[in-house]
Amino acid sequence: MMSVETSLKEAMTSIEGSVGVALVDYTSGMALGTLGGGKDLDLTVAAAGNTDVIRAKIRAMEMLGLNDGIEDVLITLDTQYHLIRLLKGRGGNGLFLYVVLDKERSNLAMARHQLKRIEAELEL
Image (tube, rainbow, N blue to C red; front, side, top):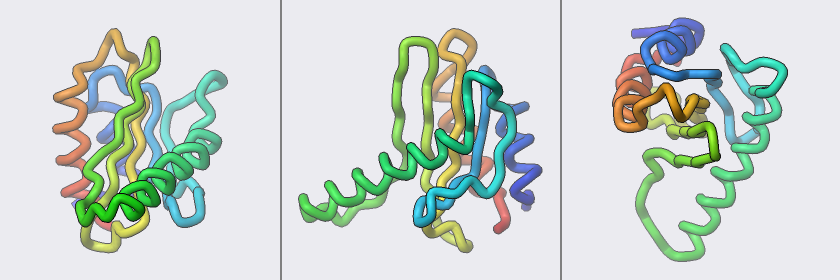
């Protein structure tokens, strides 16, 4: 089992092309931990903004009467992938892992696989 800090470090080192990673509480919009980012990527601002994305998707699913869970959300930009993975089980309700990837240096399928593995080993 990995702590939040160890999980963020694991995401930055094991996911090829990682630029930044955060663990976010989407009920409050607060980042519980961040690693990476920089002057062009404020992970605290991104955490709050992506909270709105998750809330909107949950509302849409409710309006549609969908009784399914969200595994992850992908936002594709010109130069980056933004991957949001909702946590399930063991106190993960209301939390998501958020990783920003450099599009040229990353493999999206492998990133999703690694993020799923990190989620399974994360202890909250």
